[in-house]
Every structure is written in C-alpha cells, then in structure tokens.
Amino acid sequence: MTTIAHVGVVRVVVGVDTHRDVNVAVVIDHLGRRLGSVEIPTTAAGYRDLLRWARSFGEVEAWGVEGTGCYGAGLARFLGAKGERVLEVIRPNRQVRRRKGKSDPTDAEAAARAVLSGEASAVPKGGDDLVEMIRVLRLTRSTAVKARTQGINVLRALVVTAPPELRQQLRGLPIKALIRTAARLRPGNDRSVLAHTKLALRSAAQRCEALDAEIGTLDARLDELTAEAAPDLLEHPGVGPETAATLLVATGDDRHRIRSEAAFAKLCGVSPIPASSGQIQRHRLDRGGNRQANAALYRIVLVRMRWDPRTKDYVARRTQEGKTKKEIIRCLKRYVAREIFTALKATARPHPVVLAA
Image: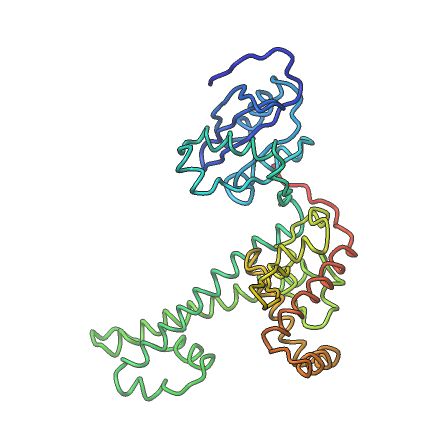
C-alpha cells in the first residue's frame, strides 16, 4: 500500500480496477491529485477494508468501478448497500493504454479520473431483484438450448452413418420422434458396430430428453418472473415472455437508471444518428448498444408487421412514400423502443429481494 498525506482533503473519488481474486483501488481528490492506492481481496472482509480505507481520506463522492457486470458485481452491490454512489466505468481504449502504459493502478486511476471528469455517468445494474433472477435463469437456459442443439446434431450425424438396418428405421423421422425412438433403443452386449451405434444414439437421445425437461422447467419459472416484473409489458403486441425478459435484463432492476426514452433507445441501439454526405441528407440507427435488446425489438417489429393492423397500415403508407423495407423497420424499431420504455416506466419496481448471506 502506498499513501501520500494531504492536509485538508475533504472530497475524494475512488477508482477500482476489478479482477477475479483482487481489486486495485486508487483515491484522488477533487483537484485530481493521487492520494493513495491499495490492493484488496475480493471478499466481504476485503470490501469492508476497502470502504474503511477510502473513507480515511475524506468524504467519498463517488466510486468508479470497472466490470460491474462481471468481476466488479460483488463490490458494486456491497457499496450500493452501504449508500455509496457507484458509477460504471468503461476500460480505457487501446490508444490511451499505448500512450500511458498498462497496469492495475494505472487503470484504477483512469477509472477515478473518468468519474471526476464526468465521462463516467452510467449507474450499474443493482443485481438484487427479480431481473437478476431472470438474467441468471436465461443464462442457464441458453446453455441448455445450445447443448440440446448439439445433441440433435449428433443424432442426425449418427443416423447418416448408422448400419443400413438401423438407418432405415430412423431415417425420415421428425426430430421429436427420432429422439423418442432413439432413447428406447436396446443395444445389447454384442461387440458390433450396430450395438455400439445404438448405444451412442440412445445416450444422445436421453441427453436431449433431459435437456428438454430442464428447458421446460426454466421456461415455466421465467414466465412467472417476467409476468411479475413487468405485467404491462406482456400486453403489448408482439411482446412475449422471452422478448420481455431480454428487454428487462438490458434495462436492469432499477428502471430509474435509464433517465429518458432517448437513453433507452441508445441502450437498445435504435437511436438515429446523422449519416449525411454531400447532397444526401439521411440518418441511420446507432450500431452500438445492447445487441440482444436490439434483436428483441427487431422480433417485435417483424411480428407486428405480420399481424398488427396498425403496423400494417403504417408499412403501407411509408412504402407509398418511397421508403424501403429496411428503412421502415428502422423507424418501427424506434417507435417500439418509445412504447416499451413507457411500459417499463409505468410498471412499479418490485420490492427488493433480500439476498442470503
């Protein structure tokens, strides 16, 4: 630990570079002078020591924490529970790192200076309510879906190369019937290619059945949590449980962290930005933001273009004006973002869930 004493320091800012096992913090005062640095373990005791150390320099105005959705999640939740103001800091770009070098204290100091300059202003997600439950279940579900897809691909590949009598039995079956039939094969104890192919098919099919049951259980729980977190959102055309869950995870537990409808559009990557050149005057959508939320808005638009009368009338009118389908979809995504944001703000935030120690 290195510390430089300064007399009369009252307000300070702390920057933290987070890692799996240790966090490195740097304190600067309101004039940008570096006061000290420390390395602490990522444990509950380490978080308490870090807070005590930072407060010894004066009044902590804010914390700039890197990786609040990953290695810094535990620290951000701890500081939030203690009433501290925590801001999410994006790691320095490569040009800055090439110019100033790369080290943990350097990154921590850069995080503190980003807070002091106002560059870092994003409030991290709370991660202590219904939306966090939805996020962890969706993460597990996505891996289960990928594993099931791999199992189905293995089944199809095995059928292609199976002995003729077995291939004739299984070829052409729909995927559900193939899984059901292969799961009930009896390989026997023969030391033959046929017997071992049956064993491989049965193993892959039973794995698919187990994953189907797991996905069904997760889907049922996700539907309950989504309906509880944002019941009004599911009433809008084209918004199903999966789409609503994606948008909720992108927004976070605290709906007030997204201060405006324009900020939500920016988050979802549907905010228009100038793309004019010469005599061509036009806009395009921002290609940044949360891509999963952007894809969710795209799915809503596609469903509405197919089934919603109001959207179909809009598409017909804009087509007559000379707009292409791609341009119409861009406009609709922006309108849907405004509607979704209004629905999210209208939904009262659930009471926080107490985390087990």
